[in-house]
Figure 1 (cartoon, one colour):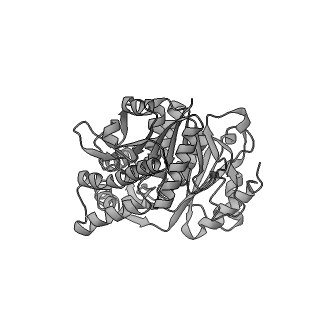
Figure 2 (spheres, rainbow, N blue to C red):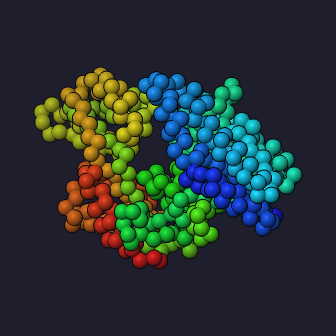
Length: 408
């Protein structure tokens, strides 16, 4: 008897009919001889509605109360899903994060899971019931409700699967797997049947929306087999697993893009050892995550430096006054901001053994007249910052240029 965790996202539980469909799928899995734990998101649009109510009252609401508010969306969908299972002739029990005992730190709105107590889940399973867990939420040491950030139900699902030793974690969504790139941008994109944790981690961090990055980190750390598939059909999706020889093939597995970054250009800082450390230490103190970094040294007599980096656009409003203050304290001449940029990236574990991948990427972009503003690399990815208006063109050029248009 396999132990299966199934996660259903907001679109999958977006209406009563879809919740009934989730109930039928869970019961079919149970009747096939499996023990089933469901993780559900809030109904599509509900979290935004709740947060909108808070912002209508206060421009910057208290983070603790925001978590108490936002978590109710999952409470509703968990209870409705349990009721739907019961209406279909099954047995089910819904649990909230604090009832499962999903313990987190106290970083409201972006808490991280510390431990999960699985005993209550097992006791309900032993009664022959399906356990329906509200995703996206936990509880801190003081008993405060916490939430895990956008996409947190993915994290809940994989973490629960790791904690209870599940045989598989199925992530049901509105797409039927992980694609070589966004099919809405590139019609020749196709589904990847198997992908390594490392490749999925890079794609998730670079803008692919299928899985939340923290869920992939947990899956890789604990060896959780993840199956990304559609909640609207029975088709097999994409298996995210450890790297195997069968995964070896072309150098590039997928192309990702992210329009959610802004470029910060700090001009005229002193060119001396430690200046970059001072800048980024102070930025880190404000809990601002920095992505791509480029430092240029001017050739004038004053030998002033320019440091360019990117941050999430969602952080820019609150971060801008801090960055201006930090730069002023370091003696910078000015700070310029640019939101009209995008990051395009290629990812593939085969890059480790293939030379010339970066050069080919740069040439493909140059052939389309696309200038590169910044570059960052790792063992299995290369990212380029380009003008936002070139995003779709760049994605198509890279996808087809690396031969991803034909299914392997």
